[in-house]
Image 1 (cartoon, rainbow, N blue to C red):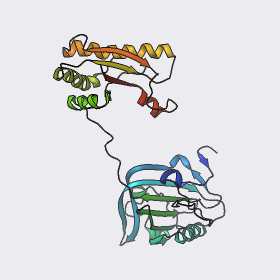
Image 2 (image 1 turned 180 degrees about the vertical axis):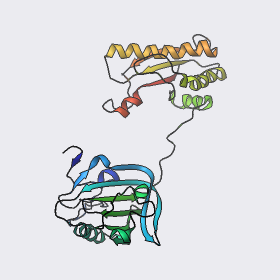
Image 3 (image 1 turned 60 degrees about the horizontal axis):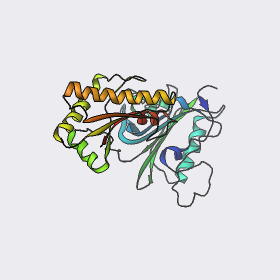
Image 4 (image 1 turned 90 degrees about the vertical axis):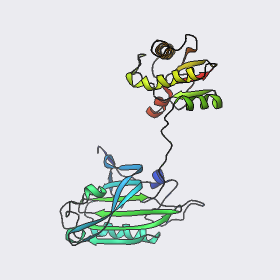
Length: 307
């Protein structure tokens, strides 16, 4: 069955070392537990799974006077959709989820039964708010609540209709910052003094080629300014590649890319010949695994090394 599989959806994989199975079991020593086994026989539509380390969503917390009441949320987001097992009602599925969650400390904030009371098809619906599409049938069950976790709060919501059900988990967390660096000549000089080398993130080439792309101009200008401001230093410009392709071809490519950077510094920015010396080491100095796309992207880089 393409795109679907039956399994425990391990919130542990997303929220850390957690397990909150529907069947009772002792928690692991020293581990907070919060993973949920879906209702027995359910099949996850895993292509529709949404996971965000830090994102926006909303939690439906009521329906009043024709208006859907939704609490906006920013933090860790997980939303999964499951196909219900045959001959199991929305009421039965919901009752099992609710009993298991309340047994582990969930405080229920709101619950509803039936489309007219839940309002999932009213006021613009729920899909644009929390991603749950519970259809237009009358047989709807929904519950939402919260429980403490790791000094913060986890909000759990379960929505069930005749054929499918959703589980939404929202965890309060701080957004990871400091992931973007804007390097100017002063920052480059500081890093060179402290570390002897620096990766210049925004030098760009087409895949497998050594021609500089126009988006590299700002970085080249800052390297030139560094060399102008620090007349006493010389640098190596070192090209690096991932491990895709032949070894000799990657060595050649890395040297050609480093040479293109040095040539641009000299021809476009009047850097004196010999101040920047090109070198290429191909795949010999990775900073990440070449087994993944993300790792290979990190390994394809240009570094400035103090001479």
